[in-house]
Figure 1 (cartoon, rainbow, N blue to C red):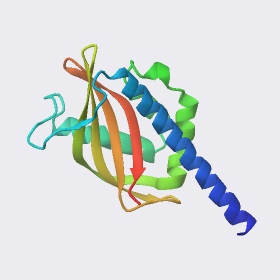
Figure 2: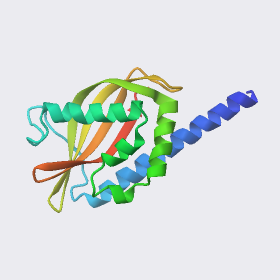
Figure 3: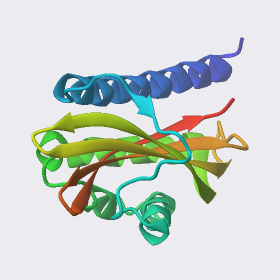
Length: 169
């Protein structure tokens, strides 16, 4: 294997490792904080709380896609719930965003797939809203990616707890 190929492979392995670690830490934190640690996929006949109407569901994805594609990491950071922001480092978010763009390129054509109810703690309900989208232009771009947007509800309000992107290889 040539030096350039070897360096490229090592770089890709480092990027994948960092993304996996960030996802693992975020998932672990939520799992330890949520009373019901078992993720439950909701039957299609059931619905999300009323605050998640079609406009909100599509807006969550559209705002994320716009922020990622335009590299608006400040906007992405600002979208997080105040409960979550103290646990985030803005510079880490910038680095992860740049690594995502290098690996997967840009996102397009996101469509709502389903959601998962993660549980409740101190009056907050935790959900994952899952979308299927296209990625293009990156080194690891795949025809289809799964975008998960974690949300927290408190009464009639909601906030974003996480973003996760997984390539469907």
